[in-house]
Each structure stands twice: as structure tokens, then as C-alpha cells.
Length: 383
Ligand SMILES: Nc1ncnc2c1ncn2[C@@H]1O[C@H](COP(=O)(O)OP(=O)(O)OP(=O)(O)O)[C@@H](O)[C@H]1O
Ligand SMILES: [Mg+2]
Image (tube, rainbow, N blue to C red):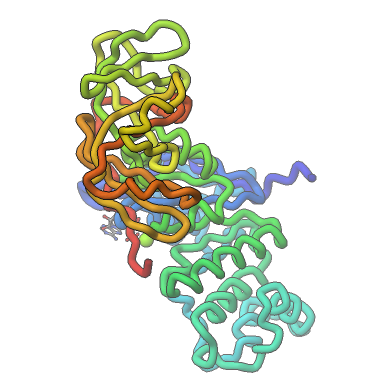
């Protein structure tokens, strides 16, 4: 490893307003050299605007942009060590694949381009397609030409704005792995914009979840998923069951909560809200962390687990798992995902059940937030 930081992206207080509308609120962000960073958020939250400020295509209203140690806030795009790949690949239709990739080199007056272009085509696995025109390629192949065309300029940072948005779901999944492989191979910083949470989680080392022009939370995919700190992040990234509960006692390492006549335990370390007795907190648990036991067998549930009683209102078998919806006193639509190993045939709509889980899998959020923030904003078109 070197201490080279020339591919760091540092945003210091950058913001963008259009008239009285703020598209991006002052934002501080560091993307370390060589990382795969994703900006994730729903349509209109300011992802493209942020990316365009890094590229130099948009002038920030406030703040500075640094690439490595160089301040580039007022440099034009072509003077920045950055290249961008857009959703519409904008390949030159009259040039073949080879010449599309060679374009950046030729523009700089470089004559002998063959070796570099061939290496690039090898990298994106298009060696065989060099003499085809863009319209003779599949969407995924065109996308790879666009990546090769950007990478041949040896940027320090590659910016990708929904580069897989035009592909169907299956191809998109393939290209996610492909882009990840390319990034690992070239080792430069990738900043990837997407509204697809699965895409961000699959590809990125670090994800920044944006909401209405602000980064709500930043972390590794597992950290964001297991320890969401806002309802928006809890709901936007996967599914969360959120329950409003009252704090019964908050002594020691565990917080005891009252919810729907029962008690739940929440590790204090997993509560991002202030916890005082009598106060409110939103308790969360992910659907796959919950076990479902028929009420007749409730005696066999081990001590020390959080438990809630309810009735199954819906179940859908989706192969690897069955997804249940359970009506309970604390939440009318509790979601539970059970892996299909040994299925209890009694677990059908109408059955009385006990939901139970390890208290360590419970998280606590500030109750002053909208419990439904981020619900249904994660787009699933193409799925
Ligand atoms: N030139 C402009 N003038 C006025 N408002 C703009 C302009 N460009 C963007 N906006 C607004 O700024 C907000 C953020 O836009 P941006 O393009 O960054 O969103 P996004 O997160 O990339 O969304 P999407 O996922 O739909 O691409 C939007 O509400 C948009 O309407
Ligand atoms: Mg956009």
C-alpha cells in the first residue's frame, strides 16, 4: 500500500441552491482514494447535483471541492482528474468500439493507441467486439465501452451516475459484479450514484444514504443495515418493523420497554435516541431476525427472547423463504421472513403465533421522527 491520496475526494460544506430551493444542503464528505463509494437515495434527493459538483459540471453555491490535496472548486471539468459515466452512455454512433475507447487518447494527440486500447478492451472483456459499432452491441456491452472510454484517460476518480439504469434487472446484477471487479483491478476511486439499495449494498465499501439534500447516514452496507440511526435509513434500506414503545426502565446495559401490554429489551448500545424513563422510543427489528412459533408451542420458546403475540394475516412462499405478515397489538403489519427449512404446516393465515427474537437484534430510534419515512420510496422498477 502507498500513502498516495491523490484520488481522495473531499467535499467541505458544499451546497447547491436553485433560487429559493436547496437541492444539496452544506455537505462534508471524504471519499478515500481507492474506495468504491455509493451515493444512495430516492429520486430528487440531490445525488446527481452532488456528483456534478465533483465533476465541475455544476458550480457549488457554497463550499469547496478537493481532489487529493488540490482544490478544484473553480476548475473546469476537463482540468480535473475525473471522468464521468452517465446513464445514457453517449457513445459515438459512427465510431466502432475501438475508436470510441481510443477517443480520449487521440484527442490528446497520442498516435500509438493500439496497446492501451487493447488493454482496456481486455479489462472490460470486449476484445472480440472491437470492430463493432455501438448499435451492434447489447446494453451491457455498450455500458462497458463507456467505462473503458472513461478509464483510458487514467482519471483519479471515476464518477458513475446511474450507469446501469437502462439495463434490465438480470443484466444489471451481472454488471454490478463486473463493475466491482473492474474497480478492484484498476484500484481508483469510484463514486457511484444509484437509487437502488441492493445495487449500492452489493458494490460499495461505503454508502452515503441521502434524503432531501442531506446525507442521513454513512457507513458500510452491513453497518447501515444492522444499525440504522434514522427511520428513513431503516425503511429505505430493506424492511424494518418499527414499534412505538415507552421506556419502562433504563438502568444498566439494557433498556426495558413497554409495548402493547408486553415488555421488550433493547441493548442501550443499540439505541441512537436519548433514553429516559417514561420517554418514547421507536423499536426496530428486521424481518429475518424474527422466529415464528405457533401459539400451541409457545412454552418451548427459550427464556430471554423478546416476544410478541399475533395472528398471521398473510403468507407468501417465495422459494428460499416464506414472508409472513402478522397482525399484533404493537403493529398491524409485522413482517417476518422465515427460511424454508422445516416448515410448520400450521403457520397459515389465521394462525395464532408468537414472534420472538434475540434482544441483541433490536435497535432503538428517536421517536420524534416520522415512523414511515422512506417507506415505499425505494424504487423497485424492473424487479
Ligand atoms: N438546474 C436546476 N434548476 C432547478 N432545480 C434543479 C436543477 N437541477 C436539479 N434541480 C432540482 O434539484 C433536486 C435534486 O436533483 P438531482 O438531479 O440532484 O436529483 P437526483 O437525486 O439525482 O434524482 P434522480 O434519482 O431522479 O436522478 C431536484 O428536486 C431537482 O428538481
Ligand atoms: Mg440523478
